[in-house]
Every structure is written in structure tokens, then in C-alpha cells.
Length: 118
Picture 1 (cartoon, rainbow, N blue to C red):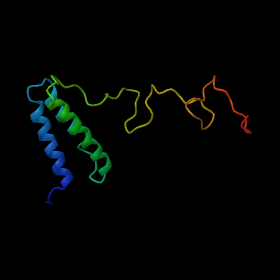
Picture 2 (picture 1 turned 90 degrees about the vertical axis):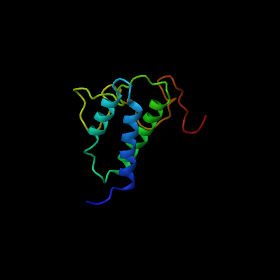
Picture 3 (picture 1 turned 45 degrees about the vertical axis):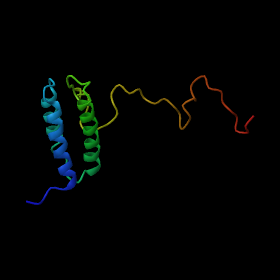
Picture 4 (picture 1 turned 60 degrees about the vertical axis):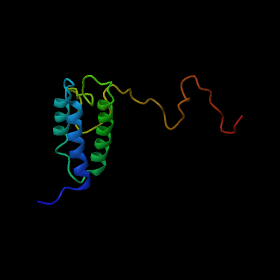
């Protein structure tokens, strides 16, 4: 078996640190285990996603260690039955009604400027 990469060692270290920081906080250890188990099937080649999750885990670790955290909830919003795994827009996102590119100030009450600039 090959030696683990630097990123793999960092992720394992983060896992141990999160478990240690979560001791004594209701739900923390179980949530950490569930979160890591959920992402265990990520391919090793998906380095950008792994690094993103690693940075997110580091922020969670800082929060757990800060002393202000007394319990731990979910890291992310759980999927609803209507959501498809793998992406797409959130179901509560309203559709974009704009007719092409524009600024955020181009609403129904925005004044139009003629092409000659007057």
C-alpha cells in the first residue's frame, strides 16, 4: 500500500482534531463521523472539492474550539425529497425574469437611457 499524500494526512488530522474538540458537546462526535462518512466516497482526483471540504472543516474546528459552542448541529442543510443529489439550483430560488444582461438596478422602475446617451 502506498504512503498517504499530504492532503490525506491533513484530512485525517482534521478528523482526529474535530473528534477531540467535540468531546463533551452533544451531537458533535456523531455529526463529525457522519459528515466524514458522507464524503468518504469522493474520488482522490477531486482535489478541489476535497480542499474545499478541508477548509470548511478547519472553520468548524475553530468554532468548536472557541468555547462558545455548546453543541453541534448539521454542517450543511439536509437534502429535501424534491432535491436531486449532485447539484442544480435550490428549489426556493426564484427564476430570473430579466431579458438579458443588466445591472442589479435594472428593475421595473429603472429609467432607460437611450442609446445616444440623452
